[in-house]
Image: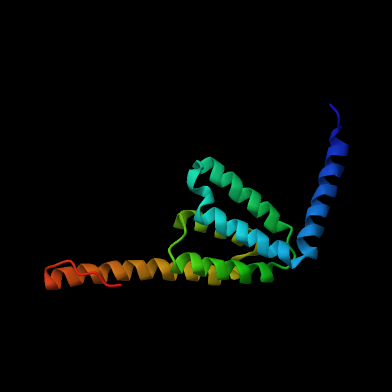
Length: 147
């Protein structure tokens, strides 16, 4: 073994401090992490198995734990989430929920409350829209498309 367990712990601790310093010294890192998450939730997870998706989400969560300015991260995240929801670019609600759950685990319910509300409102909107279209079809007895 090249590194004993005590040295490994020191090396890991030093590495985590370096990651934390890099993540917190530059606001661009927060934005780029959000861009990375956005890409993964739109296209990146598409070709991965559920185990691989879970592993990537855990890696993202690990990076998230080292961010001090979580409020700035939240602003970027909500902005990109709203675009994913409006343009229906997200691969799956389940993956969105997994990422949000990791944030909740780190920061608590209050941190993710608005984000969860956005997702909940979007789901409700889809449901109401679907119900409306079904009622229109029943009432007019034909398929009418709205844009």
